[in-house]
Length: 238
Image 1 (tube, rainbow, N blue to C red):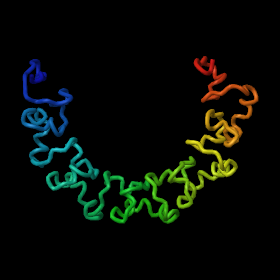
Image 2: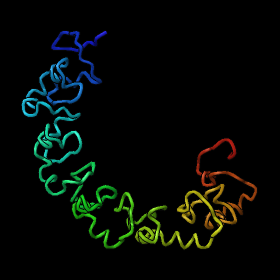
Image 3: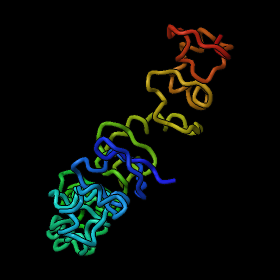
Image 4: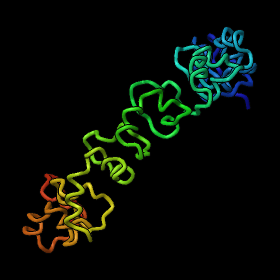
């Protein structure tokens, strides 16, 4: 059966099927299913938009001409290349396939498709990063040297061991070459982690568990830091 939608003080039956009926006629042009003849073109909200771009029907029509260049369904001829917002972008970077063109030149270096020649190395935002770490290919270049040690792709020689953020951790790992754990950053962080961390191979969690082991030599639990935290934990803890 067709849904009921309020129209003034009356409920009328239509062939309009949308997820949020209250958005119809709310003063903003909603796209896709809302901007259709059965929905009276969003109860009239999309009439002006449709007059300008009759073949343009993206999800958020209000984004067209909002001052930011949006990609895909917006940056097409039918939508006036996002209401003109993408004209400059298309001229500068005709082969750039970044999902968010407005990120180019925003002051933050983005990786992946952004940090490419086609995208002007993120509109120039990645020049300094690429000069400092020419072989470092990571998703979030801004995380390199942010004060936190990011593992895997970041903690490599090409990335300066995360811009120096992982030097302390790497020093700890050198002490325990036979320590194989899922999150090396937890070693020596001041909290006693159990299981694979609290082992001789890992220096008893980088010495974090020495006091715990002395107090409770036969207590084998996954999260030693929960002991004496003011809350009664059941199971293996009680």
